[in-house]
Length: 105
Image 1: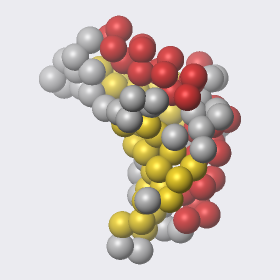
Image 2: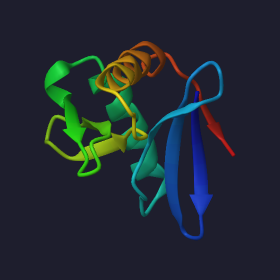
Image 3: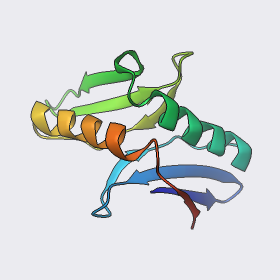
Image 4: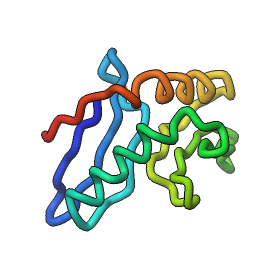
């Protein structure tokens, strides 16, 4: 499920797995419409390998970004201690995002 949240005058979203764990978080958006476009971009692009950016942080932990077709980051994962955890997170996003409902909280 995507949770759309308002913080002050900005919006952001998170994607949660069936167990309630946050698997992807967005940037802040100036409008609700922009945040909804970000959600649609994640739904559309999360299964496209060229829209997934795998990263290793300076501390050795792994994370990934989902990008739109124009290369803009629309969602970022949590940090994972191992590469296999990151790959499981990518699989979870690809499985959960396309059909996920959007709930305003």
